Length: 184
Image (tube, rainbow, N blue to C red; front, side, top):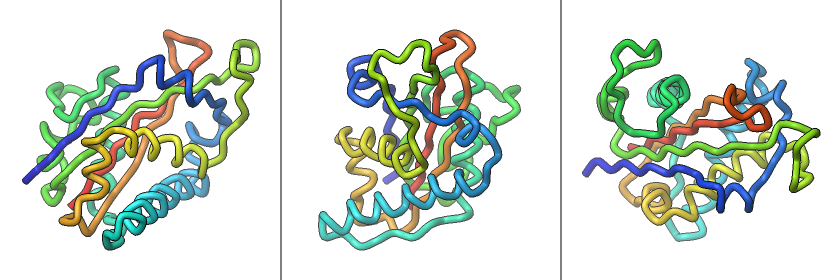
């Protein structure tokens, strides 16, 4: 059975996890930083599965490009969705997760936003590293029952994850990360 879960982070949750991300790292093509975030997500999901007596899953290189493109599609459209409808979007890669990656069976998506300014930082938050960024996104999914169910599904043996980070044009004090996770 194919499953999809959608999560939009609202202000009440935002207030619980304010961070200031080093903009030069997560928005750039810094391969080492990016790889650290991706690797850490796999570690977190596997530890979560082990804690629930569920077998580990392995990284799926075939599904990862679909995760990246879908995260970019959502950012480009300014939407949070599993479905892609705008075929003119340069990141369009198929209407549903299994269209974007024929082997995908389940998908989690999320958006998380962060303070990026020392001028406006009411929680006086610190700059986060790759491990902390991964943990923030993982925790969002873990606290959401349908997303958590996807991460703990015993039928899944493979996972892919990617994200797209960018600066907000509307809100100069925020940066955003769109994240996509696929399972099979």
